[in-house]
Length: 212
Image 1 (spheres, rainbow, N blue to C red):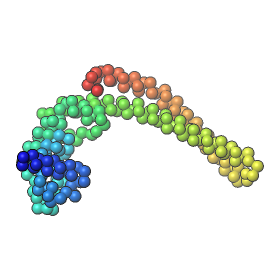
Image 2 (cartoon, rainbow, N blue to C red):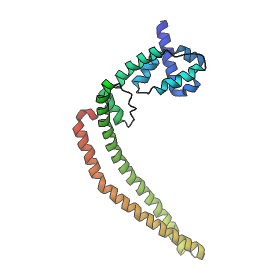
Image 3 (cartoon, rainbow, N blue to C red):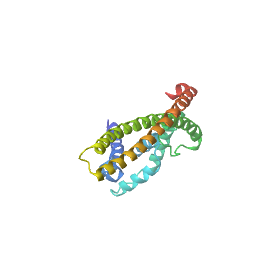
Image 4 (cartoon, rainbow, N blue to C red):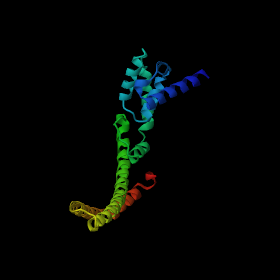
């Protein structure tokens, strides 16, 4: 029972580090730390050793020194979990970075899988960015059209001064030029999109079930 309570306290302290930041860790949380559990959590989530340095500094303020041997042992266990090739693919496919934390005997297989996942993420993002770019430009054209209507009313309005008419004409010309550039950009994106989608579909087919 006591060991379960201590483990819960340790996990709570780990969560406190992640949520509130190491600088705010309390003396009680430092004392409750199961440093092997902390090391495991860091390793299993692919954290660099810099996390330990921050914790050492935070707990040193309270006179608490980490158990480095326990931390390293836990971190090695966590890294064995993190550095699996399947996880490497998931990390890459989610768009997260890889800080080179895997030990040498696991690094190559992890990195290969990570790059495969990263490539999938890049191809998916290119398609999404292109689609979103088209939508954004179409929305901007709609806003420009609304302003152009308003400007035309100013230009032909009976109460419009010469200065207001000149400014409206200038705005109309600038907006018309911007509208044309947007249409050209949309045209380029729409031409490129099918090729992007095909490349993505082809890569997914090469990956098979691994992509999902």
